[in-house]
Length: 226
Ligand code: ZN
Image: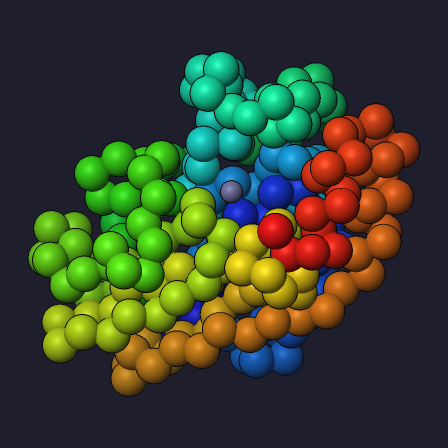
């Protein structure tokens, strides 16, 4: 089975649309998202409706939890906190309920494989797992053959004898120096995966962010991939 793997959409609708259009052309049967649908940018409701309509399988990230009052946002940096408060105030009733129905982790059999989806790290949902820390024992600990992580906004794929650990990077706010939206496609039979980068109309997101009065730094970083 071919699956699309995405993470950290962060209310960036133009980036999400570019990614879903690409994944449709890639003939993926399912799209899995490793958390943080909302936060930072100006399209929380629109992004959530895409998840709904396209039946994207998602967990809650720390920003999603913050938006529905399930996580203390005092540890967020100032710009993230402003965006979080704006997001919480802007969420529609249906969209808030939709978020409220998601879980923090998913453990499912997909394409004949044991798949585990966690936002940060198996020990802690908000701990960052960079490529160097993504070691084989994490597969054993999560009893999975495919471990999907997000949160760092930096893509990597690490293959081991017992499976693969993958972070598809961020759709809506990449931080690896490449501004283009990031996503991955995986064949669950061979466990081969590839990260793809897609251009999208970043100005649309920046203009919407400015119109919403969100901190300028959140728009500037989108062009830099930082
Ligand atoms: Zn994030």
